[in-house]
Length: 113
Image: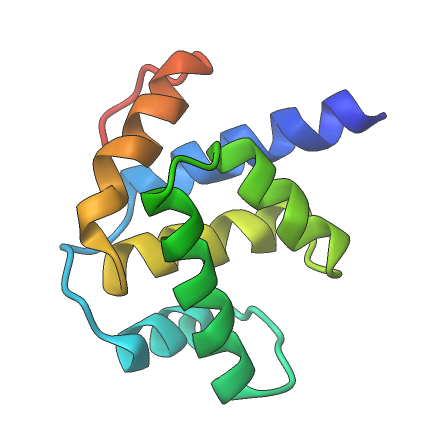
């Protein structure tokens, strides 16, 4: 079962990366992307903190699959986890986008990004 969650996460991230907006560092745009994609969260401030933490982890070499797993363990569905991760990369740490793209390619995604 765990393998299916990872595969679903990879596919969701790949799709989200493919359709992601141009990169700009802005935590309010991060929240707006989550809202536009119907991701439920209890606190905007807490979500901004989660986004910052994701960026920190990616900058320090944490594998995106581990970041997705952490999001899922906190209650996000695989697709929501992917949306949160891609939104954070798009709007809060665009400098990490190449890490995410390389990870998606290493996991077999061959579409445009």
